[in-house]
Length: 334
Image (tube, rainbow, N blue to C red):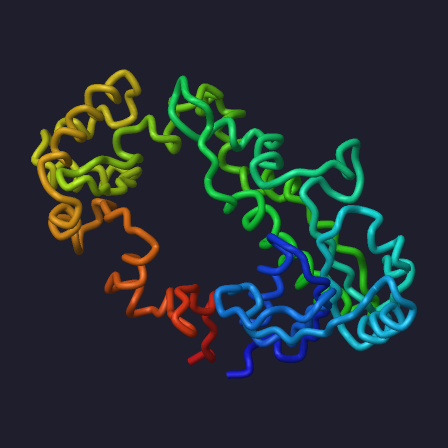
């Protein structure tokens, strides 16, 4: 299949982090993505974010390089850049220098404006400023970084793509492009509606390790198993919690006090003792096919071989390199 974005031409000024992933995901869905590189990129299959992309090597400090860059911009629908604010303007390639139809997508941590717009940072810094990082980890211990998935790729890449595709739709109406200012410190709060709502309702404590979804609840956390592996438990709903209790051979009456926080420490100890009595895979087999919401915690390599992941092709090997399949999937209406 050519993909639903086969008509879209994207010019990506190469960099690191969330902007290259955005280009890769657009290419996965059929967009023609060309990166502007300072020097020829190595033929490296481990650089997964380059899959499906073309490359054009340009010296943007030379007049001929800038002239070719302008020609490329004029023939593409979308421009993606992830530099600090002002870099593209100094090159003479800013939003004021491109055709009116261009969708100018800008990816930063702090945003194009604000007191910290020109300050360096990484995922952990952007995440720290949103309140989200403070909620992650055990009580009394420093917060735990969730890799670089939440700010870089959740609040960054996904909102950049969201903005690009929204602008493509709007351009189909007006014929005009616009600037997409995707900032991680904006995207992460936008994903936190549930938490903000519970905070406003008094149902979320700002103390780490005291809430429904942060590891305090015995029915929503990970447990160690006899072989050193782990299982993930997510039995939030009463009917699923009842199946968890049944699977652990614990009293059905515990369901009546599921959300009584005073019972959580004792329940956690009981659950931990039960899970510590068998291996990870034994528990996975025990709960397989039930709605108890108990799953094994797999390594990256193990994940590719799991029957469900393998059946969907969620992970695949290209040139021997483990990486994601295409997401999301598309199919014609029946």
